[in-house]
Image (cartoon, rainbow, N blue to C red; front, top):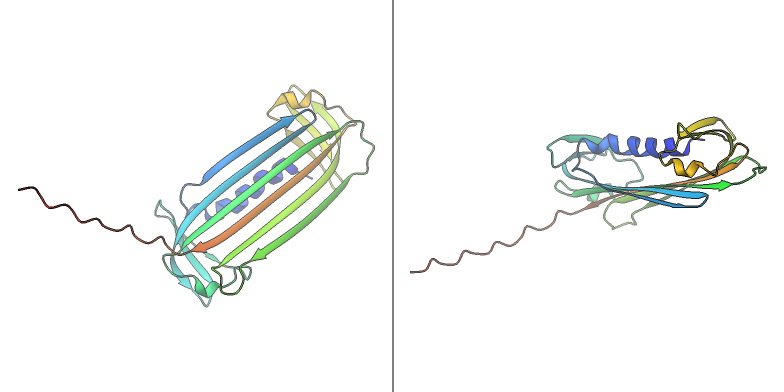
Length: 208
């Protein structure tokens, strides 16, 4: 069980594979806190233009605003692949959220529950695919280091040290308490036609 590290690893693994070929990402971070609970959410959007297609290999080459290109395989979850054309815009939206809730006193059974869902475009629609995942973990607090801003959690599979930047969150946590962590991530990849060029307004004739 490694919720915060899992959040960062998921972002890095998802984005680094295509970041070299994309526009600078649009991103946002949300942090909400209340007594005994905290939520961290990350949202990222990346875009690129399709410059080449190998329909036999189901490969796309995408170019970002920086001029970098990357070729990757479109898996079977990308429905209606044959509709993709050179010049189309590929957009990736990624959202990840981690919620932590303090359970004073502990005593509950440690557990991990994971679920996934996938969605795909219907026949005739522009290519798109999405996937979401939810992981819920209940872990024991086995150590608290308020000075260093870390806590050690023991889940059903392993123990992990978490670094808590906001040390205020640690003041109510004691060894023997439990932390309920809910990690959620969702990714949507869509392909849309390029925007039509803006109409050119003829220049006004010069005054005599």
